[in-house]
Length: 202
Image (cartoon, rainbow, N blue to C red; front, side, top):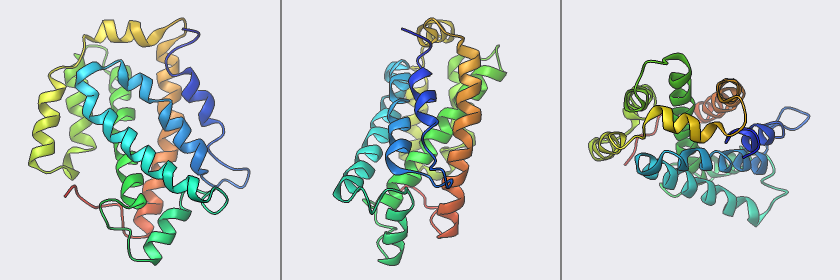
C-alpha cells in the first residue's frame, strides 16, 4: 500500500469545498467513502458503524444523482427538506447527513485518542470517543449493541501496523483529524441553524 490507508481520503478532502467556500456534495461524500477502508480494518467492532455510514452515504448519493446541478452543494437538499417540512423524517437526507456527520465525529475523536493516548488499549480509545460523541444521541438498544461491539476491537499495535502501509501513520492521522473536523463542525453549524442538530435516534 502506497502511503497509509488515509492517503486517498486526505487527497479527496482537498476538493470538498468550492472556490467560494461552499461544501460540495459529491466531493464530501467521496471523502467519507474513502474512510470506509479505514473502518474496515477494525473488523467486527466497527461493522455497525460501517453499515450505518455506508447507508447514509448511499441515501445522500441517490438524492444527489437525481439532479447533480441542483444538489451540487451539500446543504441544498437539507434546505429543500426543511422548506417542505420533511427534514425530520427518518429516511430524510437531513437525517442521513446528521448521522453521517455524527459517525465521522466518532471516528475523528477515536483517531485523536489513538494519537494522544499512546498507552490506551483500542477498546478504551473506542469507548471514550463513543461516550464523547454518539452516546448521547443513542437509545438504550443502540448503546448496548455499541458497547458489545467495542469489546471486539482489534489489538492496537496490529491495527496501527495494518493501516500504516508505507507512510507516516501518526502524521496522516493528525492531518485527517485537523482537516476533516472543520467540515464536520460546519455541518453541525448548518444543521443547528435549521433546528436539526439535536435529533436523537428513534
